Image 1: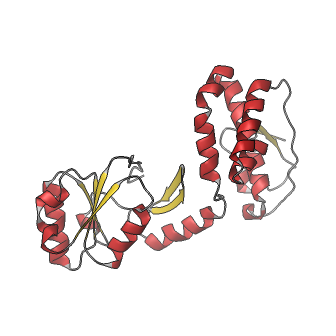
Image 2 (image 1 turned 90 degrees about the vertical axis):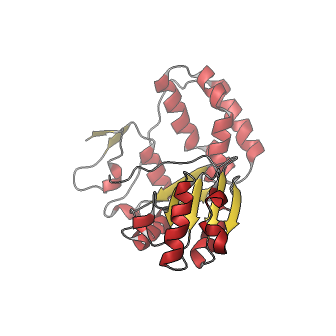
Length: 245
């Protein structure tokens, strides 16, 4: 791993976008729904250190080499982190392909080696991450303290969370019925730990991408996976599950 992925909280942050090219507009569109304060800088102001004072991140779309280098130097003098479109040698960080689902944000980066590959991977992953996934995360965050109090042991808590994430609670939240999701969540917490487990059957051989989304989620939630002899999809080899059979 040549670069470490990290997330910056944007609430209360100041982000400066310098330049007037398509790259600058793309960054403004990407960040428009964030809680950060966006500042647009153009022309001679881009070469002033004061234009970047207090900024958490600076994005520069170099109109030409002189603009890119001058703006980057001014931003660094203000002790900010700098990204310059298509000029990795001037960057303190690179921008990945982003999947934005509100509370859930996924990023795919190649360190600038192949932005097109990152975009293709993002498109593949987007198909597996429903639009309502962020609502599920928000719901679970609201109930964190209740879940920890009801399930103090880590194993029981993980089992409960896996069950609710793959069941009716998550489905209701994804569908936008938050009142129903909250009601189901409270009922599940009140019910407490389940004494018995659950067996699910997943049929399918061949390429892993032939598995349905529901089947993939069932496999992801499994503690033990038992498979028929013979080749099985690579996606059956879930981290944390014990193979059997």
